[in-house]
Length: 334
Image (cartoon, rainbow, N blue to C red; front, side, top):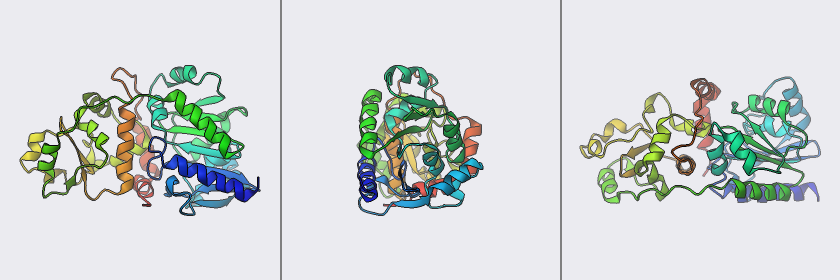
């Protein structure tokens, strides 16, 4: 297969994966292929779903990228438009690498007993567990130091899934098998109280989400209890800062009916106890996709699941990476 054909195969795989909200949300996830000393990788902020419509891949000098890794330098500093996970893609020996924020995988990866649970479900596969570590250079170095040559599947704690192979079709076949094995049926939530939500949102900055499943955050008590415990994975942090400390705490319907919703105007969305969810009309498609992804994760977690939340130090690390920049990158496109 020619280099052009391999790049086209990667684009086709990327588009299919990016079009599945259970595998990628907004600009999350990335893919790459190594061709003749060049690392072709998805650019930062680009949507995988746009791989056949836009030029989302950029060429990087593979030797330069790997040299920087050996020196403990993040290659993104040299290539600011490249994916945050460029180092990870270069660190893996595989010709084709795919990283997805698969909601079923994340639902397992946020558990304290994840390695045990995954051992049974991924039996016979060449997989490896990578405990949570910050994205970018730290993750790249961790994979470089721990990855065994025969491993082609990596589950990232509190993060997602990475698959490597010698061709795009091989990677896709492996992805299909992994998602089959890790599939979880989501918990069904009580329907939203649309009449109440319409009453609150009338002549306001709030609107009903197009994704009806988002209302589970307001009508499902188990999901509310899970979210009250803290942040489960980095993408969730784009909605959390000093202005929105109680973002995931449900608001009483009566507080909003009394026209006091103006005090919540800085929030991206409102979780209304027993009624559903309203989203700020200013939200971009990427942010709406992130909310939908979060709902899909928590609806796959049972009440008794031993959850492993991000620590305060890990959350601070995300902030040090530049939460504003992270939010801006995630909100690009569309």
